[in-house]
Image 1: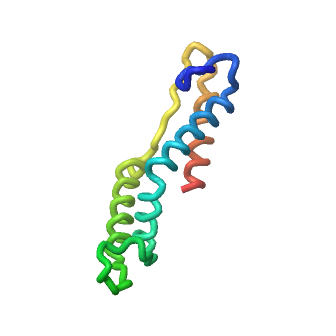
Image 2: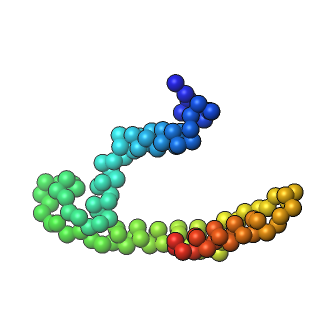
Image 3: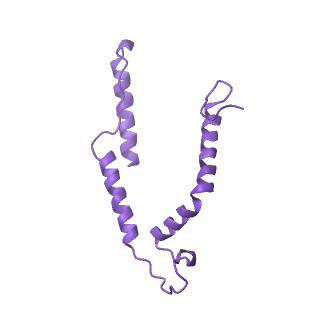
Length: 117
């Protein structure tokens, strides 16, 4: 059995990545799935009787304040991360003698990333 953190020739990249993904998914399901579903319901404004804190609660009103707070925070994080121009760069190997190869690839990546955003 291979160590989880070890990547060897015996294992393809796909197998190693899928092993890591499956391990993470199992950890998430066992430790965080219930809490995630609760927060997701609250964020979407969906009432569920299991979210009650007391038996005497009768109201099914869900305030949009949580959704607004989450979306505002996400927008701030996105702006801080991606709003400052180019997010990545590629450095050229100056020894290869072809300076235009990396310039071409860099521009292609910038165009692709601009289309997806």
